[in-house]
Image (cartoon, rainbow, N blue to C red; front, side):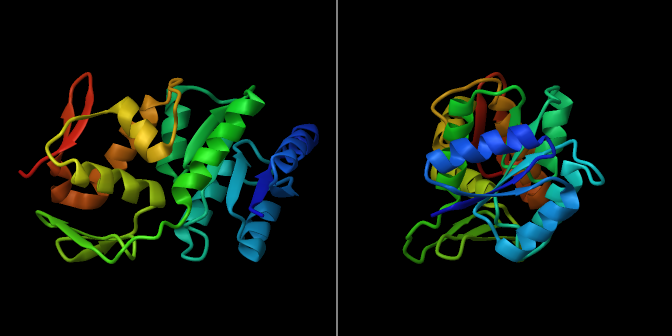
Length: 227
């Protein structure tokens, strides 16, 4: 049974989320502030975190940063739940490492679908040992490891899958909708294409000069090609 940690200071909402998640077959834990949430993350290592942004004592963005900076917890996916729905708020959320961003009020059904999609793409996949190279990029699929020009990079699971998808479809333009479906597992698009743009920006930044291999096809999507 997968464990989901709810970090939410609105107790009624936290209880409602726990009820719906347990009905879907998940085990739930609840924390009502950032410090308590971080302590629970480190003790329990949940399979996923639902994280409110506006928490007493410590912002959700700081909680997310701390989770993603620790080797022990960086692999745990984080879905942010917040009333702050402006584009800049979403960008900040993704920049600190969130795997998804859901704006309140939200549909319980949509949230459950997003949780399933995030858990599915973070699940370990049985893959044969295989090394893929493209320019200065080297991908070890068995270890989910990326090196660029000999330097090992710290990629999230989503970043790894996004880069792997672009490499395996070398030279072919991928629309944002296709990437959302194949990397994030979404079969619906509701103002979520910004998710792709933000993750592409993070990939480019982490990859340095090799990030220039990821080309923007204006008004459509992205492709990977040698410089």
